Image 1 (cartoon, rainbow, N blue to C red):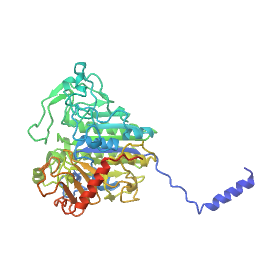
Image 2 (image 1 turned 180 degrees about the vertical axis):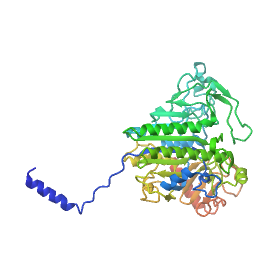
Image 3 (image 1 turned 45 degrees about the horizontal axis):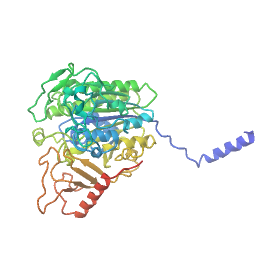
Image 4 (image 1 turned 90 degrees about the horizontal axis):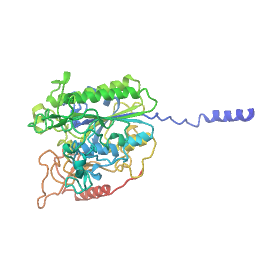
Length: 511
């Protein structure tokens, strides 16, 4: 370029400077830490329920540093199917396990090679890890003499060829199971196979048992009705300590964050905590520290664990561009008599508990901190579900998901950035109760396709009476406690929501 051309080009650029606005730089690929509590209620977090009997200062601080959602929901009100939706962006009633949960010896619910949020992030250059409660099944190695257990004609096999559980005597624990996290988008894993009250009681690191489950526990608190320090009898690793599981996962998470902070690649840590699901095992300073019994103390241990993770992120200087999500997989197992005894409403103002189609079964705390993009101290009443993780990650990274992947996932990024109060493209969300009831929510209206809670609250199921309603319809704006069934008063709304539910059930969304 000669000097005349260069000078004129430079003058043009200077002149345009007052007209052309620079493109605002997008934050670099953020680290993503997804903390999933187990059976934590909406009302167990003190910033959601100031009148509660539990203190959660670290979770409260996270909310003040980011955005707190007040209308967030688990896709289902029990463990396994919610975790399936988080990983795949797909409602579990579309899966090989349409209803219910796996046990510790259940086969893998997500087929190897499937799309997961882990594979999405791996393909975008992330280092990925899961540390905590897996509960998505493992394809344990089966002894040759018992291979017929995997025969499709086995009556224990469901219609989709999935075993929810199997006899542990059929399993060869000397061989690593297949179908674990390493085959589903994770570079590193350190997991408990299922819930902390389900055998086998052992850890797997990188999909391999770190100690064979050669010991046996007779179980504990078996007469409490699935509360207290309850766990079932079964196989366990000789050195396994129930009250050390939550601290062990927290230690591993802090260690992993420290290691990854030194690396040039961004990282994704999925941290599904085993608590406050039973057994309720508060230890140390938290024992007796709350005003809600062992359960409340255990919730405060969860809060301490969250505090440790946040301190690790903050102390390493990576907080600004680390997206932290804190939430729960479903509502709490908190019986009405516990609410009366401790004067603590674990579901806040909402009806029901874990397992239910009512709000207490699936309305959950949901908090996002991302200083590079999310305004601190904000609150959103956007209707969202945990199935939305996959689409949100894709939007953050400005990439597309494979066709037909994550059909029930919608990006909440515009809400996080304060651009809208609603999630674009998401016209409704669907909830599922433990007995299979589906509920659909659009705006303030909620339709449940049956009578009763559908879960652990009584009555679980009611048969329609002649001339009575066949389902439940509530206006949550006017009746958040779901006290007045409007099913017969608004037949057009019932028809509309049934049609929309049928449409979603048959939908295959593309991205």
